[in-house]
Structures are given as structure tokens and as C-alpha cells.
Length: 279
Image (cartoon, rainbow, N blue to C red; front, top):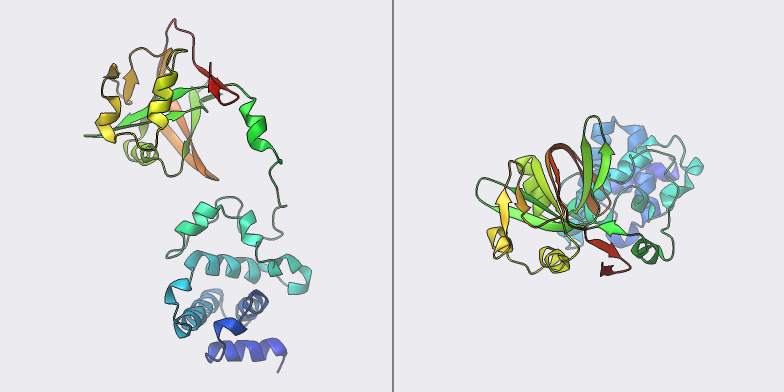
């Protein structure tokens, strides 16, 4: 009997405790189970064994559904562990998942959001040391993105409105994953964009404030009107109304792509954000 056979036998017999089951052994057990059993059964046996280990340690909530299956999917793909030493790197999943995605996948399986789960892994891409400083030097327009469900409007400040295509007419905008407006857009299937005017920096701050009022309260005292795609601010510099075409999760934001069904430009100079200030 090989050492990996002995390891799998001990794992399936419940003879391994969490303290005696480091990451390297986890990888070897997952790989051995995938070689020994049909894929679905191998995954089930791995999950059962890990849940028993967590239960014996008095920490049943330590089991993580997405981390377990993600490691299994990667490990099962390897024909030889010796050819893929990266599997023994505990930080490997950071190349496939954002932190937010992994945090949301403790109780249910979630697909990777940064890169498909396949070998070889993507190169580790460390951000430039001063990425925030560089991005501050790039001028961006500032807009209020809004949508309206059956009863409640939602809005948030954005600075990433971009033309995607002229034919068909498409624009994109980035929305934080935790934004209430994102969920409303997903439900309603449309959004409205008011490009702010140069003297509307206060409105940009208002719709970006984390403690702002919810729903219709956000618009109290702000002249606006309702379009088919959502609320539009009356005194903005330009307006767009869009039907949602697609949503793409990218790191800590979603990219919303919309087909433009309303477009109007005013005469006011637009607000620009540059180097951390409004101009």
C-alpha cells in the first residue's frame, strides 16, 4: 500500500484530525480520491471527510463549500502532482477568486469570478505599487446612476460611464458589488444616468455617502423627473436611459452594459473628478 493509499484510508476512516491535516495532505487526499472514484463520488467523499474533521474539532462552521470544491476541481485536473507544485500553494485560489466571492461561498458552491478553474493557473498579477495614485491622475466624468422599481427608486454616484458601441448604441458603467442600486438594476433591467454639471459636486457626495437615506429619501429636495429607465436629475449636464443588456462581475465591482434608448445633452459644463477633487 502506497503512502497516499494509507492517507486516503485514514481520511475515510475518520482517523485524521484537523491539526494533522495540513494543506499538502488535503491536496494529496483530493487528488487520490479523484483517481480512485468517479468524479462526483470522489467529491462527495472529500466533502464528507472534511465535514467530519470540522465536527470532531468542534468547529462545524469551519467547512467552506466553495474552497473545498475549488481545490478539488483544480487538483482532480492534474495528471501528476509533481507537475503542478503550485497546488501546494495555499494562496493559489486568490488567482481565481476575489475575496468577496470566496466570502460569499461558504455555504454554497460559487464559480470563480477572476479566472476559470483550470490548470495551469493564471500568472499572479500584483497591482502596481501606486495604482490608486495613478488612477487619481486620470480625469473622469461624474454621474448619478438611478433606477426605479415598482415602488422604490435607488441611486448611486459613479465615475465610470463609458461608450462601448455606437451600433448598437451601448454604454457601460461600473457598480460596487454591495450597492443596493446593483440589485435593483438586476431586478428592473434598466437604469438612468445623469451626468452631473460642474457645480454639482455636492450632489456627487450626497449620492455616494454610505449613510444617505434609502429609496425616495435620496431625492428629497433634488429636482428630478422619472423616465422609462429611472429617475433623472433636472439640472444635470447630460442624460442617458438604458435597457440592461448584461452584467459582468469583475473583482469588487460589476460592469453593467446597457442599450441606450434615451440620450440628451444639455448646455452645462460637466463635472470632472481629478486627483481626488471635483472640478
